[in-house]
Length: 184
Image 1 (tube, rainbow, N blue to C red):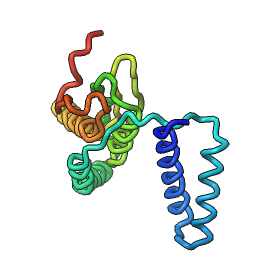
Image 2 (cartoon, one colour):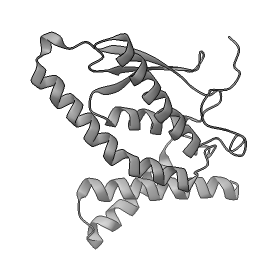
Image 3 (cartoon, helix red, strand yellow):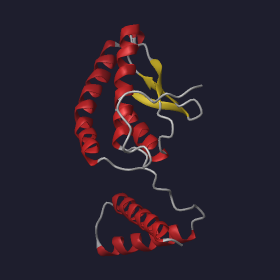
C-alpha cells in the first residue's frame, strides 16, 4: 500500500474516532481506547476502498461559510416561524433547480447538501450528476419574485461551498458564479 493510501486510511480512522467520541459524549480513557479499537477494526476489515482525496480546502472561504451559517440559521428560522404563524392555507412551496459545477467532488456535494438542508425551510431532494443539477425544496415562495430570490440565494450558497471545497485539479482556476461552460 502506498504512503498516500496509508494517509487516507489514517484520516478515516481519526474521523471515525471523532464520530465515536461525539456519539458517546465522553472523553474518558476507556471510551477513547474503545473508539481507537473500533475505528481500526472498521477500517481494517471494511471492504470499502480508501476514500480518494480529490477535494482541497480553502480555509478562508470555509471559515466565512461557517460564520455565515449562524446568521442564515437565524434568518431562516424567523422566516419559518412567520410562515407557521400565518397558517398553512397561505403557504406555497417550490422545488428549485440549481446548477452544479461539472466535476465537483462528492465530498463538496455532500457538504453543500448538508449546508443547504441545515437551513430551516429548505432541503435537497435530488442531485442529477449527469445533467449537473441539484433540486432543492424551499418553503414559502408566494410569488415568482420570491422563487427567483430563493433560487439566487441557494445558488450563491452552493457556489460558495463549492468554492471553499474545490477539486484538486480545479482548485486554482475555479471562480464564483457559474457552473462552467457545460454543454448538454
